[in-house]
Image 1 (tube, rainbow, N blue to C red):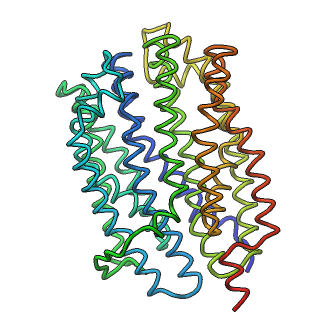
Image 2 (image 1 turned 90 degrees about the vertical axis):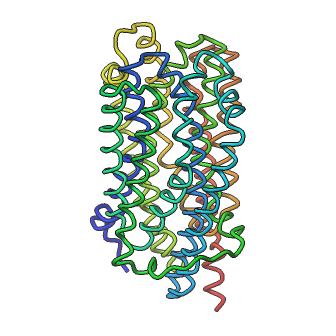
Image 3 (image 1 turned 135 degrees about the vertical axis):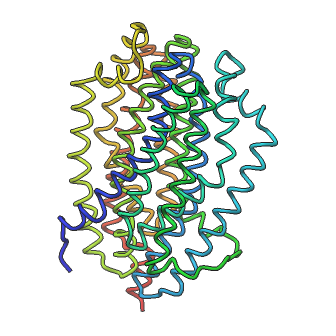
Length: 441
């Protein structure tokens, strides 16, 4: 079988990229409108709340990628019955986990908000935003899981459409609720929650013409294997929340609210650019998993090389945009605050250097996960996305102050790039457990 690059770009990579851009625009729309309407105080409250969005999305990806990877492996072997069983288990436990999370969040809401904000001036705004948004946590988790399953069931374009339409709705409702009704951060949270509900309803259209996702029944088998396969994806999403929390804490101690407001802009631009690479890797995931399930190592390696080539092109484009137009990008979020703007320009230029290697690292992580090397993918995701980043942040901050904070992302991704190259070289030499199993038959 030859690699049809044009078909892969149009049917897998581009729908994945645009779909994930849609996901990033949920928070981006909130930040853009909140920044213009409520200024640095609103930005600080919103940015301190974002880690909870990462938790909800991460739990959806934990189950979604675990189930989707197993489903594609089964489809690669021609076992549609087993593929359907994985899908049933994924959606059943997505709903259960969402309801359990909702209960937990409501029981400890005050403690959670105090922890995220440190009990400071941003607490009232964060309480408004999360007070309504967290009620939608079951929808968040189920929607994220279903999006991943749709891509693996051959409907990446519907997944993209759902995410983009929801983003457009979120921005429209943000403008209505904040500028029109004057509802502030409560309105921003409500707009995002309603958009998630609409997104979930759109994805349900897939069930009319589904290949695997049809006539599904609840399946309550324990989800531990499911979660193990998706753990790296969960960590990649959760690490964004951990990183935001760590940056906020360090910047508060160094320069106060100005630093947090500047980072709110950088973090949201980062979420948007990261979505490009996540979309690429998630678009490639069904192809990786199916190739491995079929025992086609040559196709797997060809897909990996092509994905890496695309990631390099995207990486250079993102860095070029951040270097050439930082003021234009920052001004979208806030105006009339020269202190915040000045700090943001310096921070964005230094922070953006990390995007040179981010795409390669994310594609590599998904490739390892799809090759049933979940342990290696998980360790890499934890080390690169959290442990190394926090260690570099603390070390560089003590040496060169706030410039070191902005360079943290670059240092972590550079070390991750070297490590990932070593792991992928070993993957080429040693067949995965799936390939080995098939070769032994």
